[in-house]
Amino acid sequence: MPTTVSQKNQKVRKSPAAAMQEELSELAVTQQTKREALLLKLSIAGLVLGITVAIVAFFLSNNTDNPLNQRDAVIVALIGNAITVASGFVFLYSATARFQRFWLARLIYTQQSAQDQD
Image (cartoon, rainbow, N blue to C red; front, top):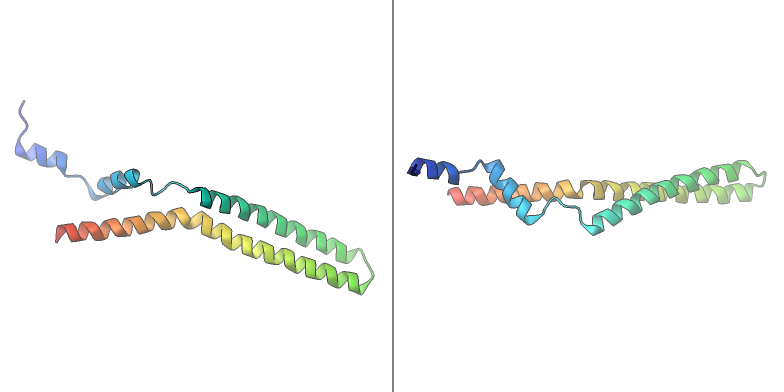
């Protein structure tokens, strides 16, 4: 059965979502990079380490009567809190990096398709 012109046009035309999905699979935009995986692992380790340091410092400060040792333990607890906060921000960055890359690719694709239609 010979194909007609309308059947050829239907085969060529794709929905914008399908065309975008096809181009994204060619670009491998949504795959996680080695750097992101490393940052994610380091941030999780930093979160655990920071919380552990803060808890240990709490017990150190409670188990002594010497104010000098208590102040040292408070400083160590603040360092643990700083590690936890910094690791939290790194975790948020690495967790959202793939979404940001996909969003940027979608934005570029929509701008290119708008230019192609003009």
